[in-house]
Amino acid sequence: MPIDTHLLALFTVTTMIAMITPGPDMLFVLGCGMRGGARAGLLATAGVAASETVHVAVAAAGLAALFEAVPVAFTVVRLVGAAYLIYLGVQMLRNRKGVEDEVPVAREGLSGRRAFASGMLTNLLNPKMVTFTIAFLPQFVNPELGQVWLQFVILGAILIVLEFAVDGTVGVLAGRIGGWLRRRQAARRRINVATGGIFIGLGVKLAVER
Figure 1 (cartoon, helix red, strand yellow):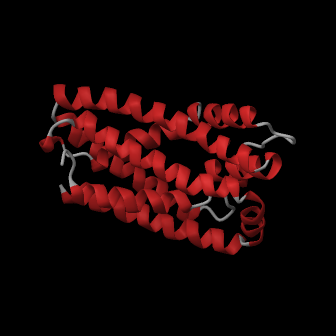
Figure 2 (cartoon, rainbow, N blue to C red; figure 1 turned 45 degrees about the vertical axis):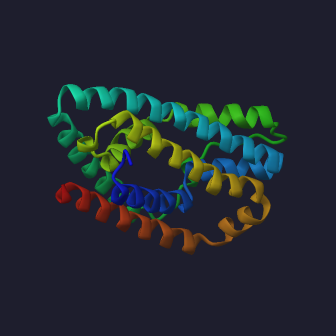
Figure 3 (tube, rainbow, N blue to C red; figure 1 turned 30 degrees about the vertical axis):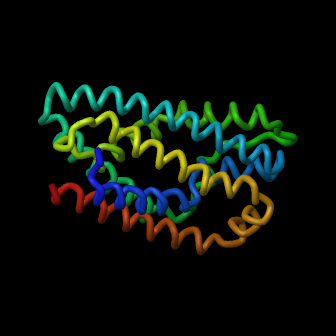
């Protein structure tokens, strides 16, 4: 197995928890589904997933080469990434207003093609996603196992699958889920608090464990 199974399990659980937290991508897909139907919601998810593939590929190519050329760079990137995860967790705990202000608005009568393009461009041009990818993925890579690029590929594939599983479901069931999210402001805040705590704990754990 070209990847640390313990880190793989931790990555899968953490990513799933992060995915089910209502964020800009989920709410954008939700809006597309509500305005353009299930097909538009699913294609918006495909657009977001396509841009995440680009983010992962760029991170894998650049970081794998960097870790091979300068081994100490892995430790630096890991510690900086762990600090960034802690920062994200703190921001989630401090945020009590939700994420509506950050969500791109989908137009009325949205076509599937426009939903895909909008999802891809919105995510691709989001500097927060680039930073998150560079900070998050290396935390679950073990250079001692070799084939760092392959480890990134495996993690990226899991990320895309979970993207479709979670946001794709939101897009298809947009009508019901949209009403639920609008009515459950308190529940969303509790989810943000819980996720923030998990990110802080994860950042601390990964910073001191290896």
